[in-house]
Length: 165
Image 1 (cartoon, rainbow, N blue to C red):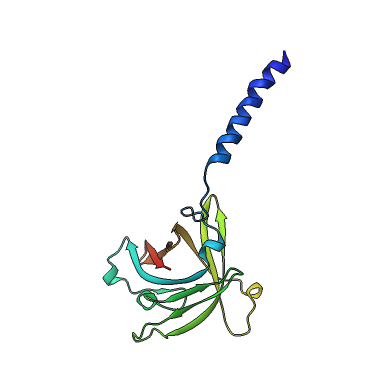
Image 2: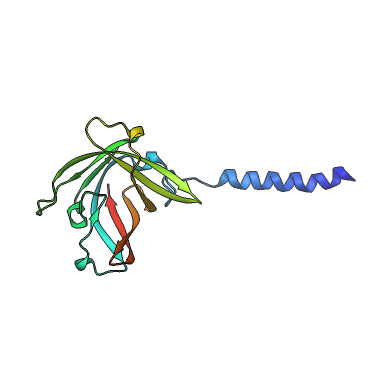
């Protein structure tokens, strides 16, 4: 009798394996990409803001410069975690130039995050304890959206960083 009960279970398992092996898997599959999908040079084209009027938002991001200074910045992400971003804006107080970073992807509760640490001259990534984490909202071969929350006058707003490759 027990052999008869195992047969339907084994058959079901074979069907599930056959179906799952036939589905195609894309390396760049929405928000849950791999670090290899992020490597390359990205341009920050725009930052959409949820919860506030963009023209009135004057906040400093990444402990560096005003949000507007980052528009047009170049982000170079190397597979091994090294990288940089370069602010190219000539606006006053933007302090144009390259900043070294160490980046990675992390999954927390099935949500994928891009995180990075700024590295100053001579610093090693393991000695830097502070960094930044942004949710990876969308990823394709040529576009990426990262999101972070920010506090504006006691209210939470969301910054949606829109990149292209």
